[in-house]
Image (tube, rainbow, N blue to C red):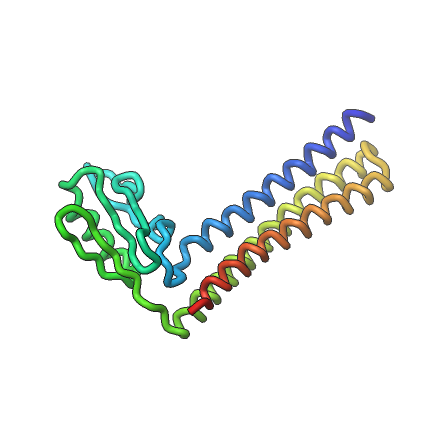
Length: 191
């Protein structure tokens, strides 16, 4: 009996961990959405071709946001400045880099209401993907639990109790995903 409960516990813990990862992915995706306020995560998608390898920008330069309307990219090696500037132009971030020979400044333009709406739609798509991922984890865990019940490793009462526990975990993660989304949406709509 102790082994079965241990197996159920492992299934529930694995489901919770996988749901946590779904919320983290949403948080990361939300960070990459431009809000009109400087954030180093906005440049996470930029990769720079150096020494024959495409490297993430944050591995070849320091990225700072000294004020809400400006990002400053300072390369570790000055000789990479033009390559970084070229990649920032090609990344089509809606920002025009200016190179002063030491650092690259990226002024962040004001966002139009239309652009904010676009970003909110994108955010909602990310949130829905997180919800689907969380529900898929729940479905997988339920299949495992039903398999245990079918093989007479747990009783129907235990199955019901474990399903309730799994549903509570799912609901908590859906709420966390919504909180991440709502916080980002509030930032987006801030003028």
